[in-house]
Length: 504
Ligand SMILES: [Zn+2]
View 1: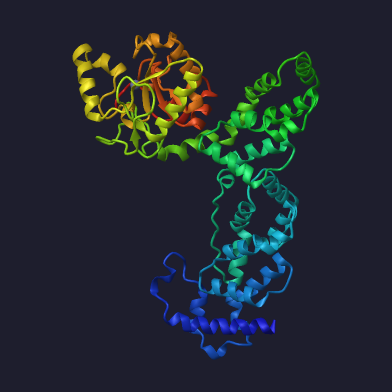
View 2: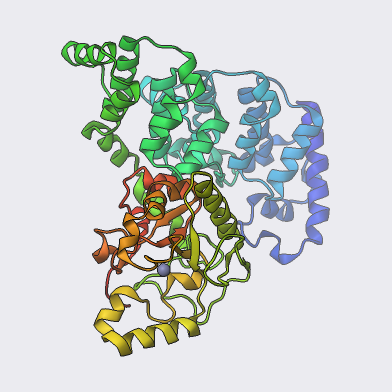
């Protein structure tokens, strides 16, 4: 400890000197650390062997304690100096220092179990052994997939840690969490349950972050994640469960309980008689119990909030144009080109949508279905001439049901295409739904990232009558996620955005 005291003296002297030239705004965002006051008010010569001087502001004690409690050893010179420097200059708070120790390479090399990690947290941040209830709760959170930083942050926010910091005169501070799995515990534990129940193991960081990301961005629905994501995964299939074990796992995963004998026998009997596993899986995935688990996860609210910034962003592929969402005046996408497909006229789309359209038309053609592009991007002034023509012909009320007012048309986004049958006889006509082209599009467009934007039964939601020819690009993930919710799912419903028949 004698050595340490020496380093500290050297450090504090250096700090006094440095302090003289320190710009005023160096602590602009943080509270001015108490150390500065102490070094300014205390004459240099009073430092040294007299450790009592530092009791009100015991950085040495704080840092040394972290070495002892977290790493189980005395400080090394360079590490100690570094932390003393960062804490005394306010570059690091107590919270950041604790994170530095608890997440260090040295700590990771100890390969602590979740339970042992939590125990060290109790000692390091609360200065006591764990209580059984508290420990169980933290370990459960880790086993459900949150990061160790998430746990650390929970301890940092405790009354005990705040008291510990003031005892040593250190600014407490906070740490930030950046991983998707740490964004919402309800959602993370929903995915964590899938790992624990379906795969029989705790989540790995990469995997759970990926699922949380897809869910938060709504590129997958919780049902998709559970069914195709987990039950169709290679890892699950490799388990080669027999029918009885398979059904038991379904009970735990989707109904959140163990099986009852009657139910188990019924499902196993069906499987033994040749029922597909996917049919049984769908039965469980559509249960009320599973819907409750989804609701409890907070997925929908969280996702809608997260995605809100994209709906009015012209650079986003989720840009919305409907009667409740006007586009910026005379907006024109900058990345448009003519898709390389059969077309009735020159009619550009945004680059990504054009590529997807080409892929879709080629796939249809390979199956003997010949699609023709009709109308893609329309400028606001062109839409104005179209709309005014319709109003002159059939009156505004009627025109509003099938043509957008200028500035509100989805065609202005460069993401939509009206598609024709090969003959052109049913172009922009409801009878397109009966053609081979119309039928193919209805059931296949989602595979290429397109949605039928104005389904038959949803006029009050989309604001437009049924248009079996109008397809809008949203990307493959979103199109598939929406399709998994039913063939009539609308953009407005899926993303929870305003729509309807009234102009805003
Ligand atoms: Zn259209």
